Image 1 (cartoon, rainbow, N blue to C red):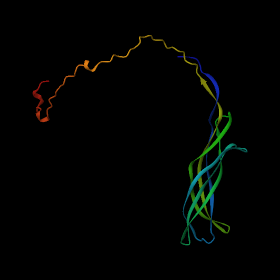
Image 2 (cartoon, one colour):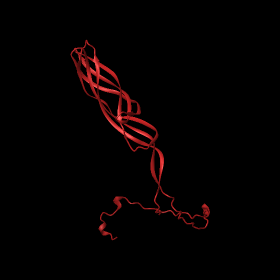
Image 3 (cartoon, rainbow, N blue to C red):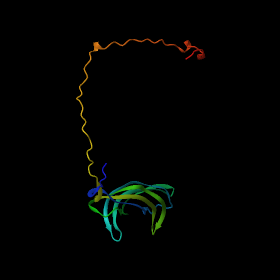
Image 4 (tube, one colour):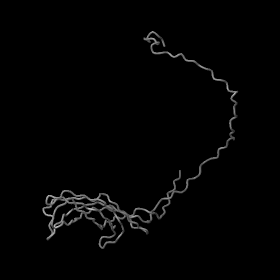
Length: 210
């Protein structure tokens, strides 16, 4: 076993250089026609959530962050004047996820990616009057995560090759076994067994010596 210390070298490899998570909340207003009076919210849900783009940006006084663009649909079911109706709107969003970087030796080819950890959901939905119009305000929350891949320098230890301690073993050449003819093999004797049923066996074994 070698006792040499490993040689430390720097290599360039592609690795995760930073990560971040962000939970945001926003309010969405769905405008209701003026003729709909005495409104009551019956239900709501969010569908078709997706991320369209992720990119690294430099925000003033905050450093690098990941800009995430995406969209989702908000559905609201409500009642008015003994009638029911459904409203839908498509929301496009731009959010910035703070980035925690691992080290500072990122060389080039940085690539940002983002994913949805928790799908957007409605925390609350209620009727609100804004001036002369009536809206249903829906409070949305969502959790996203992002990471950055890039070429970076890392230090690795390189061990020297182990010494070859194998020895040459001398021996004789092996030959294949000789073929034996079938006629030279002695036949196997036939053996017969006398099988007994349970009722043919003695009832008490104490009379027999083993």
